[in-house]
Length: 152
Image (cartoon, rainbow, N blue to C red):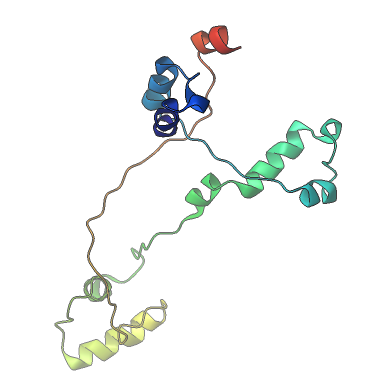
């Protein structure tokens, strides 16, 4: 969020944002997520009038549409359940390396890996990219006291 605030600060529309707010967003790692609800959706779900919108309905819509929820549902290749003898063959195939195994071993491993949905007979054409993993802890944010005093 802080990058967006800094970018818009030099424009007239963002001139009201103080440096204190930008620094707070930078240190806390504030994330903003937006989505739109069209008038047809609002009519179909009984939300056309402000009086009919409850916090629970709003939370349900948000939970259905949020991108953050999808981050938790991402599945990563974790083949720890593979037998140990197949792991190196799978790893070599996954990285696009040549399989330095005998012909008989190749067919035996291929047959066993097919039961896991892996076909090593189809070359895995990959470009190796170094993995960078950053764990992010998501939590709700409450406005600090100075923000409430200055902006209400």
